Every structure is written in structure tokens, then in C-alpha cells.
Image (cartoon, rainbow, N blue to C red; front, side, top):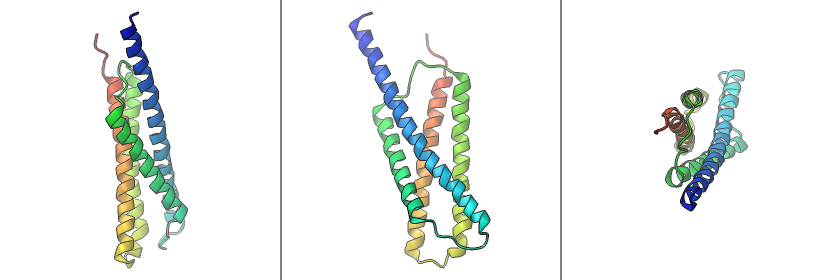
Length: 162
């Protein structure tokens, strides 16, 4: 094997490790968001009809998860290529399915926000603005993660070129 091909293989391995690390971090951030959605649904169901303020620690955790997920996503998008040369139709389909399912949960977040905070529309406009901005930021972060899964799923489903 020539030095050039060894160098290329090492670069691909390094990029694959970096991609996997960033995807794992994004997955962790998405898990935080999804667990908060689950907790929001539980609070909503257990306390129907009463406005509930989210705990400050939960809001902070959502902000950190959204920011970290975005940092990983944009860094990967601008500096690390999608893994190439791997082919797995089954795994590709599972990742694509997971991406769609993930954004269904994002839609659920929107409904939790709407149902949970609709009784509290008497809040100050500034309070509604920060809550709305947080919702948009978290939804956008979840969208970027699901888009990354969709891209990876598509890349895995594409047959390798000979």
C-alpha cells in the first residue's frame, strides 16, 4: 500500500471517529430534550387545568442541550464529511425512521408548550417572548439532529460505487 492511500485511510478513520463523537453528543442532547418532553407531558396530565412553571434547572438544562447540540451539528456540517463507503440498508432505514420519529416528538413538545402555557396567557409579554424563543431554539436543535440522522441514513442506504 502506498503512503498516499495509508494517509487517506487514516484521515477517513479520524473523520469517522470525530463524526461518531459529535453524533453521540447530539444524541445525548436530543435525549435531554426528549426526556423533558416526557416530563412535561407527565406534569400536564397529572395537573390538568393548572398552569405549571417549569423548574429553572430544567430550563437551564434545555438551553445547554440545545446550544451544545447546535455547536456539534454546525461543526460537523462545516468540518467533517459524512462517513462514506459504508452500506447498510437496514441501519439506514432505522436511522431515517428515527429521524422522523424524533421530529414527531418535537411536534409533541409544541403541543405540550401550547397546552401547558395556554392558561397562562396573562403572563407579561416579555415572559411569553422568552418562552417562545426557548421553544423555537429547542425545536430547531431537534430539527437539526433529525436532519443529521436523515442524512446519515440516506448515506448508508446509497449503494457503494465500484
